[in-house]
Length: 319
Length: 319
Image (cartoon, rainbow over all chains, first blue to last red; front, top):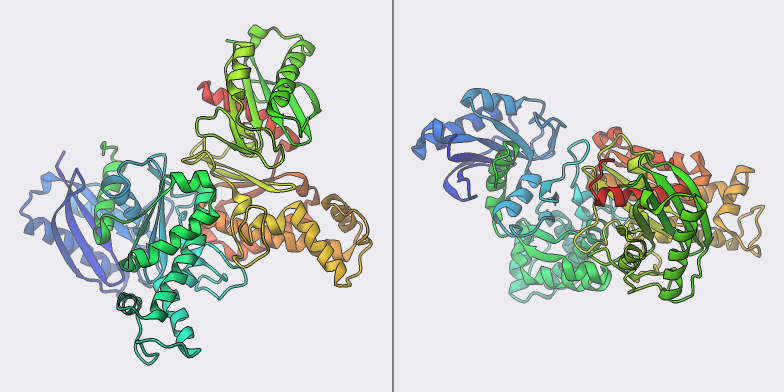
């Protein structure tokens, strides 16, 4: 038995690897640009190469390596062997990546949905270390989710649970990419916030940002910190939408903790204040008192650390 | 160790008891009208009396009795000792009913939320015997819920999980008793359906039912089976609202089974067809294929059987 796990976080933009110890600390990192429009074979080779390189770079022996945890966007099949479908990596699917990695390095590998992996990272080594149940929302281009219940990831009957971004909060609301209307992602993802912001500008509201700019959620956040009223308002509104989603999570799961992660948490208390106001008013008192709503502690490392943690859990190594 | 459990189902209208064997069969029953506006002491005495009477009537020895499982409406405190608040039994709260029953009969007692108990009944001895995860919705005056994950009831951090009726599906929708807007209960409970039906009649739509009647969900269902168009339409619309709620449950929890229970399932396929249509279109394919949507098998007995099953589980007697 070795001492280190390789955690891999495959994203639409970057492919990141870390050497992670059994306490959930990253000792060494390496990353590369994902060849996101390439076919599965090429991406799979990128992963194998990155693993080989990080082992070499960190000067650890392959015998010191426990195995590989791989977090991937998209729906992972029930047996955790392949990715069925991934919106941001259109050709990344139906390749037995778990087996390919395991055979190449003669070490165990687990394949996990990236948001699940990140949630497990926060539970193992981040904000959720002390709790037995948490729900994590990753607020980025879309909204991902992960659910930990009774100290275990809850993946559902078909390994597609925790798709919290597609919870409907306004059944006659705007169309979502998923085909339904009024998903929380339509309102409160970075994409959704930018869309609503542009509508506000079109309606004539003043902002230091101009509609001609290629507006991003980051730009709105920066403008808000500079005091731009339109930006402040749209972030507050985003927080209120998220608050509704959190009320639903609290009503359904009543978890000990809700962890917010992803690029949008850069807005900090501008986003958190309306979330707290809405949940305090709308959740049951018992639930509001007992559910801590916090930001991620691991930030962008949650995926790498969590993927590594998933491998340890799979191997039933006490974490 | 005895052979029988007393299961109690405390409702706003009826207080029901059953002698339940360790296979989840009811061998003997007894019920009485709940003294619903009386204070806690009186209701608590009703419960003690009913237990004493059913033991006597069934001619079993107290030594053959394993203990008592008590299902109650309302929020049960974290330690499962008392009811904090129950909308339909306004003065039924803050009495240590678990201890009172246990001391009076010198047997263990568990106190469980009634919808949780019913969900556990379906899991133990009903529709969900073969599955490890299920979500149950009880469609009555309100909408209650129970969640089984990994063969265990999931009660949440504050024992208030599974309040599925208060999931928001239309954040600017009609006001709910809970204070929020657009909860699924506002649309798809019996009360919600009757309210919508009256609005339709007021708008001038023809129905064999008249707005002057004291319309109930049962009357709408009966009229629909007689071919009344307005009644058929309103039940179909109710099914579509429930379909949205089920999509959310499938997205979040992806359970193996969703069990529908309560008076409204008397509408049978009239209600189930739109639910299936909406979930087939709106849930992920993997989730739709793997989540069975079924009606309760135990019907009104789920509460009694489930409360008994909760006691066995608490005592860790294999069920």
